[in-house]
Length: 342
Image: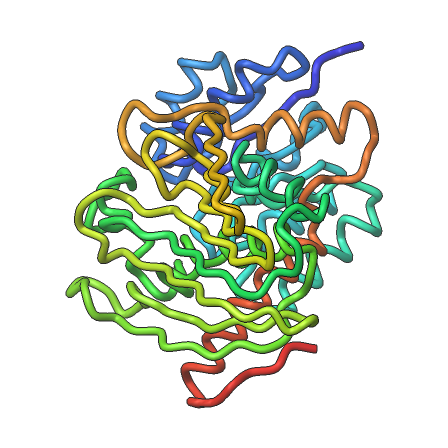
């Protein structure tokens, strides 16, 4: 069986540190093409991985040799590039947030269905070992009824991660559409949906620009979420955590409390009602800090669903549901009311 030929559109940090090296490590993949409007970046990645250089994504997508495309562009291009690639008969792995509106997300899903191609959204938190184990404990009934949760994702901001620093597209509303809530918060809406196995039905939020002076997108947000069974909790997303990154989640249940990524030594701690404490060493979560780029499993899962023709583990429909929570949070903040999701 010939290897899957992949093209990567966008050669910024997420492609450089995650998509491209993880594709290169996968035995079923050949990195065939890379594209970036900054030609030097594309050339650098092309030389490293033996790929063809493009500066126009439409030309890359027109290459009939390419089977699948990773979309690693600024947010406003996620939908246009993904739809074009799907319509050209390519499988698509799109970075989060999948789109900038419900309409765009629906168009992406429709294109995947019409062309019978895989569409996956890169929500890597589902594959973090502590999160997988926590979901098992919840599903096994060890935690009992879930009462509440709190989850957060925050660091000092994308200027430390993006190749363009403070000039990055992350801070430009016309390209990013949304700030910390789209960069970090959407990961946590997806995680909470995954862990609890329920949809969020109501959202209340405060979404502010309080820490950065070089942007008009949000950098700090706090939301209250309510699920369909009545579980309530908080979600915080921020670019104002100036010291160590915080990517923790705590689940409060009838029989136990689960602390995920809340302790530097133990990625999951289960504190039971009877006083028993179980500490799990399962390996760390991925961070944006230098030297901590472990395999996210996103690429391997994407490749596997194509090679074995299985359902995408984070389908367009799943990505859409997580996006809609973020869109509801923006609406709640704008209207100063609780937003109810359909």
